[in-house]
Image (cartoon, rainbow, N blue to C red; front, side, top):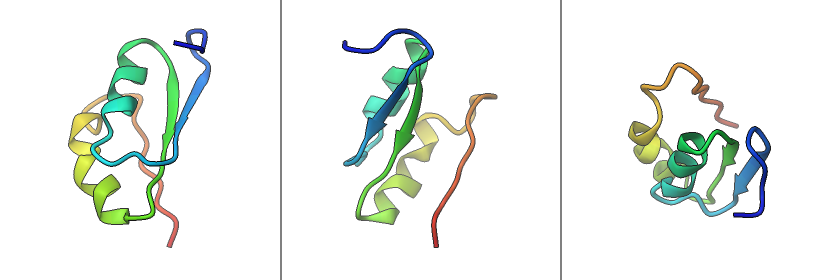
Length: 59
């Protein structure tokens, strides 16, 4: 709602990653994070089949 296409959306409480999916569908880039790594890992199914998806996890 407040970004132009190809700008980056940051979701600090990604949870089920709905924001990330919508951001990509609308032509944005996005960064998802959450204090619960398991949430981000389990929600990757929403976007991990996309050719423009890259997964990065901080150990």
